[in-house]
Image (tube, rainbow, N blue to C red; front, side, top):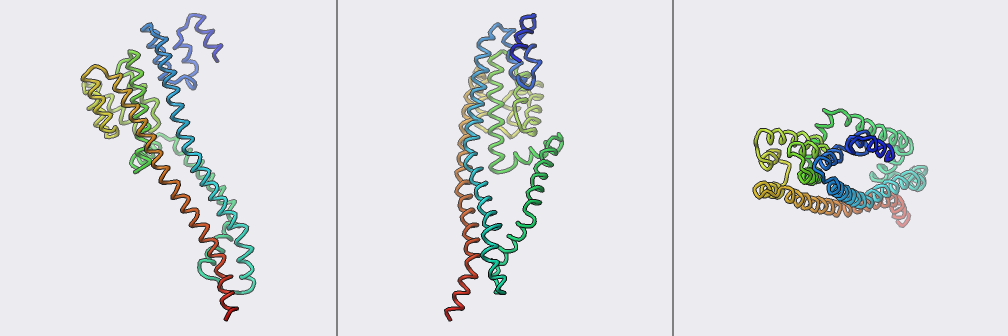
Length: 303
């Protein structure tokens, strides 16, 4: 790929045109900024900003992935432990009391029914779950369904705050890079929209861009979306009034990144202990329900 890009540049094509042959590798932001750098004669500084931007995004992605590793492993471990107890341990122990004709407590009978269900329908349940995941992913490729889904995600208490933080931070940082590269504000907003992941947020920001085109200030247009935090709007307004919009957008993006990281850490800090407590409660219930017939038999024998 790089050899092909170099060959086209050698033939006389611009770098931005050469990169346009690989849109899946070099996105709209990259190509637009390279084109702006070529026109302004400051391609070196533009490429440096793009490198910093890519490094920042990679750091945020790595932090999010690292934060999610422990909860995911914990969930898999919990499901595996419960499935093992229900499929292997419970039938062997409780099954002996069933063969003896002993009446089982309600909790033990429930556990035995769950074990039978898992043994007979466990594989079908797993296949059905995988098919459901595939169906949901396929449905989310439909624009109308994806828009409604993303709107619902934004309205959720914790997940919605995380999604808003991620998308607004990307918007502010991308727009900052665009303005520093002499890209007009409307073109910069269009490029910034392309790096956002939530379709509902994209729709609202595009409407804000239309308001800016009609003469509204950037702060007022973004405020009408009701998606951007007050601090970011205040910093954008200060940047517009002082003529330092680029710097204020960068500071707003940094502030939003910190807020996003803090929100994720708090959410995981609450979720992880809750998951551990839930797992412990489930294992305790299984153990107690398994031991109850044994305890009842001991009580009968001691009388």
